Amino acid sequence: MVKTNMMSKQILGLSIWSIAFIAGYLVISPAFAPVPFTFTLFLAGNLIWICTVDLEGHRIPNINVILIALAGLVLVLVTNPEALSQRLLDTAIVLIVMYTISAVAKYMSKNQAIGFGDVKLLSAATVWLGMQGIYAATISAFAAGLLFVLVGVIAGKRKFNQPIALGPFISLGIWGAWLFSLS
Image (cartoon, rainbow, N blue to C red; front, side):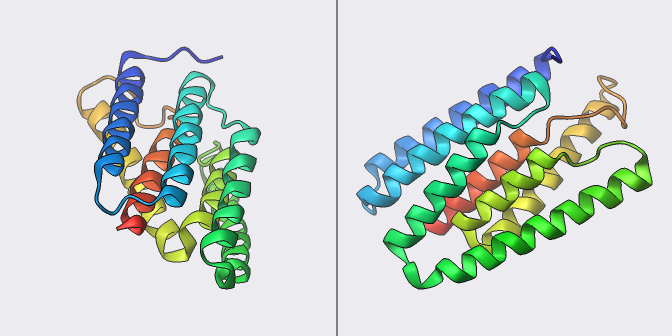
């Protein structure tokens, strides 16, 4: 297992407090609706757990990815059943595209750039977010990850080619896209 460093713990802390703050806002929001709120709490819990595990060991638990995908399917069936076939198609497309990007990046860099857990997490989140939402989540996750690396390199705290846990950045991207979809 990889030990977490201080910066990783700070990101985890920030992630947890951000999610808690936003969940609290949703509770007092006039647009509060029980079904999306229940699913939002479920998603938040799974994303927090994914952040914790990925920061500790650079691994995203399959059980959390499966739970996110299944809950997303139930959510779509409850709130918008007509969209189910499109969401499943979008999920398959994201899985294939992200796996291809991961394989090409690994071939070109000779290192694992995007892990299969990251690919599966993005695919599972597509059920929740649809194609437009997953674009936003992916772009924001990769931009935040790159910014994290660049700041670390500039500060002299890390090397540019040093691996990072991408799961927390993906989780934050998913979370932001999900909250935006609720508004």
